[in-house]
Image (cartoon, rainbow, N blue to C red; front, top):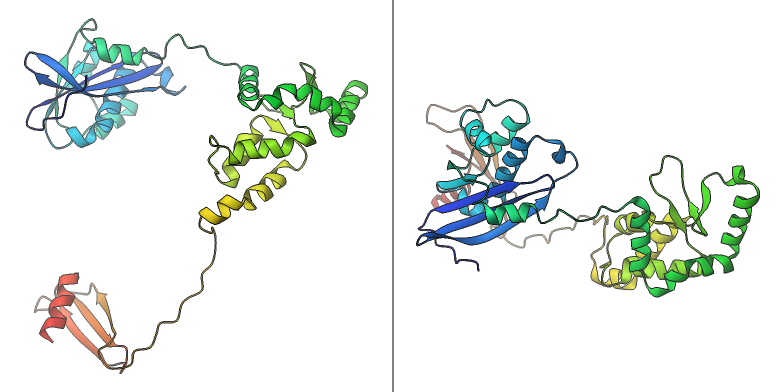
Length: 333
């Protein structure tokens, strides 16, 4: 159960790292026990997984401090880490390399490092290992997962390709003259587009399914009526048909709900003419000149006041540039 934050008590940040993730738990002492205030964890990127053990532990500390910045930045706290080598290294670190850059990002925080045994670091350890045991999808599995998450009509992709004239012609060319359609192949009895240097195949979409595909990736509740480039990116990742980018662009730009709910993008609004003043002192235009070389009287800037009706100009020497200086000049004069 989470504890309500008490800012009069000291915070305790407990961190941990595994081969796949980093985690952090923000605690406060309640009696003899530590009560959690918040939990955090995230997966490591492929580059971060290549780091050494103490670098991953340092990354976990950095992750926890930045996540809890609003709690920890303005007061000293206690930092618990189960890597004894990192505890020693953070006290004697030389600011070079990747670890040194991370330590510089920890500079705004004031903390005391305390080593805690791994068997005692139960919560943070569990959070950092929560992603273990999850299977990693292959490229083929990712495409199949996308197909299975689409409406049921896409489960009959093979049937629709068999009835589509474009797909039938393409299938015939693949079987008779593979060299003429080098970027296409038949995979699991489905016509697929496989461009050179691509990491995954893309399903060739029959004509009858294209409007439904556009509606699913742009209009559905999961899609959220996002913009052109995001919609193109989501569809292009797994599907292909001729001139698809142009078709997606036209579909998104003619979406009725987007036109009514979203502001116009990349529109150039002309300059609006201001209404001319009808009497003196109705409109005043104020600006600063400077900073200039400081005079013997300490002035380093000039306030310029222009009356919009008479075009009468007044100059006031001032010592600094601020809104209060403008207010004082107008009050005095």
